[in-house]
Length: 127
Image (cartoon, rainbow, N blue to C red; front, side):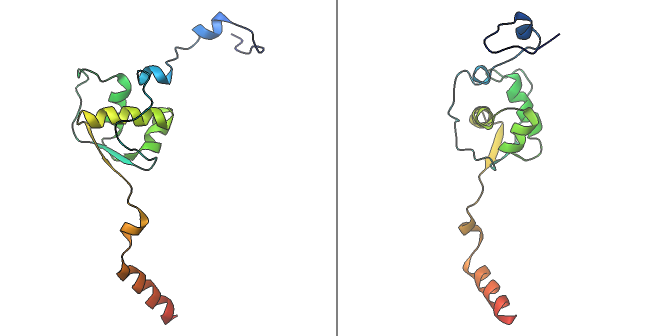
């Protein structure tokens, strides 16, 4: 089947070739996640799903399965071949229902304390 088409040309075969689910259908039109998720936010499944939970779609179940080991939002999006915005909305649903826990990245200033800076300076002075 030839899938190439010129601009403006409508081809019914092109529409029927592969089932396509638009991202806004997966999120029921929602664009805002219930929670704040950066691309480096880590998600991990804390409660397994049976597949019969009300309000969970197949994409939710895939995320819950993937997150049996900690993954970032970017990694989940890559595994599922979905935009990060869609993954954020779906993760927000799972977080709200208690299936996943998330850990936000710590700002650099919280990670390093004054002792660390002093140790680095002392090391540099010793050179």
